[in-house]
Length: 476
Image (cartoon, rainbow, N blue to C red; front, side, top):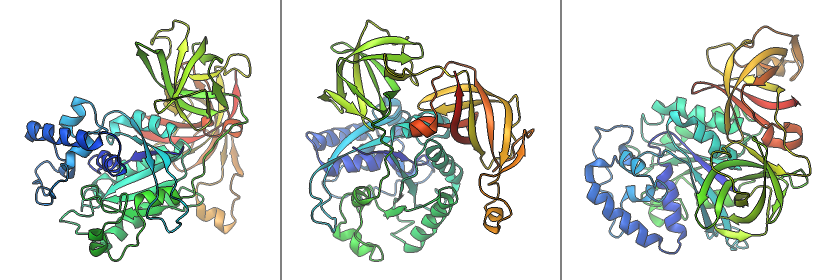
């Protein structure tokens, strides 16, 4: 079951897109729920900021004249994923929301792909202040959907946010992207082909400069009218004759998704959230990064090193006996534990075979991002990895590697990965190197060579992504 994280700046239409897909894919009670939300939106009135004008509060509600008879209000789509009262009144997502859809590709050219498939969507916040939650959402996903507004000046004013979110996704190990150009029905856009090409060119150039191979699909759509979301409506074909028949759903189902599924490795589960449920007891949600977990299995949670027994396992509210790598699970455990003892970012492993261990020091291969500061020994940064956010200290640099300029590599002046300098005193922006770091709080780490994405790390200075890389060696 592939999982996609929905990324984008504030007001790009992420939650509305997820709500439109939930509505069009159907489900028991979805239409009644949309009708209920529409009435609540009318009652709240001016307290809700429309998503179409979230970036410009002085703009009129241009969507009021576009509403069709029988269609729910535009804002009620977002309420399917924005469940907090604060989110609904502000018109902005604050927490991550996971939703599973059962879909079938009806518009695909391949008629054989009619069987229903399950896809998981993770709606993430759009504020730059929520970089922690964005990294948590990326650690749960296999690929990313980049939602970008086609309205003039909305995308241009949010270029920094877009680059940050795309960099966070790539730092967490995501290399598969689907680009969505939203709000094509806006009066200032009017399904313009030139606007679509301008925005997609900027996005593709940024991603191609940071990924080895880029096979990204770009889909123009409208969450309000539903054009090109699940199916290409006749209205969208008349207004976008320059675009083919590929929809967002067909792009997701036909994309060559490379999933890092490690079934032959020891059990590792990254803890995302912890709940105390009356009937089930203590429930832990997260992603199975490697191996498999069974009902009745004895597990250990590191840190703090507590052992427990698995009472039941659920995958999207369906009870199962076994959950394998790549699944988003909810695990009910026995042992009389409290929420204070289990924290997000902990690692679950088997209590007998290859237990996870606390890292005292580790060596990482990193690349410094394009920001105006150097990094030096003694610098304290915030490390983001598999849902944990802890401070780390740079002790020393082992080497500076080639790769600062791709033109030098192409000309043959230096080979990629070649050691240019040993024991440097600092690393400049866009330089690569190996660095020794010491965690200032207990954390479980694994090498990227053995556990793949579990060994990916990102380093922030406040809210700015400073460096990213992978763990090469660990000292326990």
